[in-house]
Image 1 (cartoon, rainbow, N blue to C red):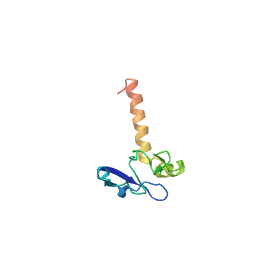
Image 2: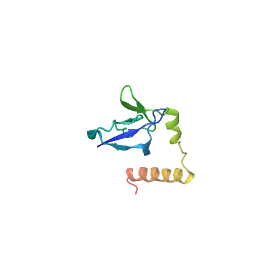
Image 3: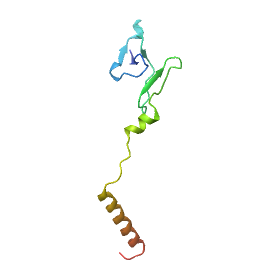
Image 4: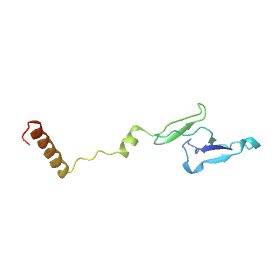
Length: 95
């Protein structure tokens, strides 16, 4: 038995499509499946059947949209300034 990984008509990995195939007893791997495990760390795992490998299918713009930059709140700015003042005072031996 081997685990095979499903991809759709656009060659994008389908996480719920993993199955076991009994190749020792002559069962064939269905079309749209591969024995190559998708690597971790890809946002949109896309399969290239000619090269038999997975690649990143997401654009950099899409990836960046998943992690928007958040401006620090006013309280975070005050805490940072306070920490910098305390550090400066400690380095000069005042505290």
